[in-house]
Image 1 (spheres, rainbow, N blue to C red):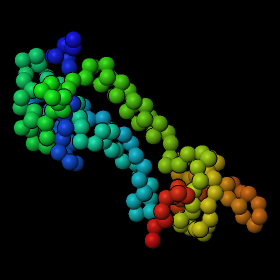
Image 2: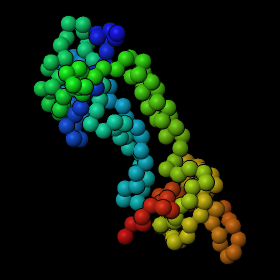
Image 3: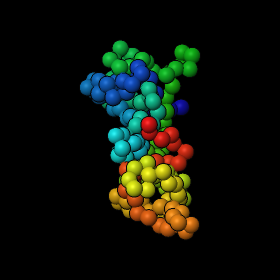
Length: 174
């Protein structure tokens, strides 16, 4: 049997209100965890890294002190309620939340080292003098990506700004 004081509860938020729910729960003295993951996104012709919620509409919460009740959670702004199985409130052990934290940290560390493309990925050039060509990513630097392109019947490695590339399977901007 789990120690209820150390149990984490799974809290469901209203759509796109995870941050609001987390802030309000923390203000009430609850310990709250909202796992986030980095994601590459193309905006206005440039690649940017954004944080996204690992489990949309869900966060983890536990009481800040042994005497704190979970009853106020359901009336917190941004919160829909606690996840339940019948009449039983769903709980997670601390080890599960620690494993989720470690997974999120590992993904964050990998994203810090990488670009929006991986070596071997098929890309299309959507801007610049080579627009319309496609090739394979052969290396990744901080601001440029080395792409193997076929030019004049020969394969040539060309350094191209990442902002000029999209994944070949992605739809092209109109």
